[in-house]
Image 1 (cartoon, rainbow, N blue to C red):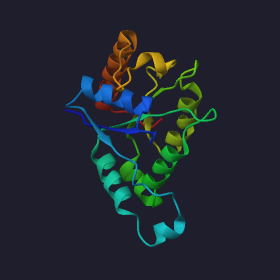
Image 2: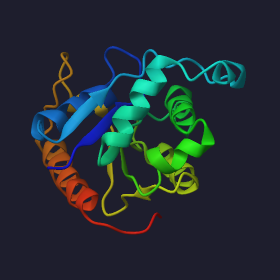
Image 3: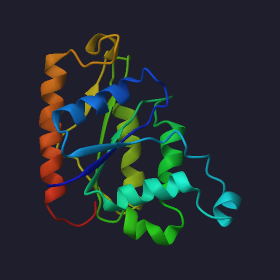
Image 4: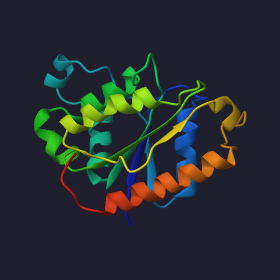
Length: 185
């Protein structure tokens, strides 16, 4: 059975992206574990020189042990959020660890936003990052939830049946992708 580590790129308690990730876990509870990035400090080479912080080391172990990485990314100013990029930057440090953490690792990106264009620009912005890290980027499908205000209830439950079905299909495709072997994209 393949394990996928899910990370939400939003720290907001009522985050649509965290809710989307929780729905993926609900659909595939034995396949997805969610990591919390609240304790990841801002990247600083001086801090790294004194030793990689424990929250980062724990997250690196989780990712290294996982068969895939699923990011639920918001879109901020037509790109990905700094807090999520900061996390990926830390996970790639020291650079010798990239091979153990990211090389050949299947990666998929989903996202939700109140706006009308989904997270198309944020998702596209991740592609060169994961190419650089040598990951296998899942491009077989896309999942961008626009108008998220109407897709979730006040408690963060996904109520839009079309989006639920699309999420289920996306995750099935990604799980299959995690099980295939291929060179990094």
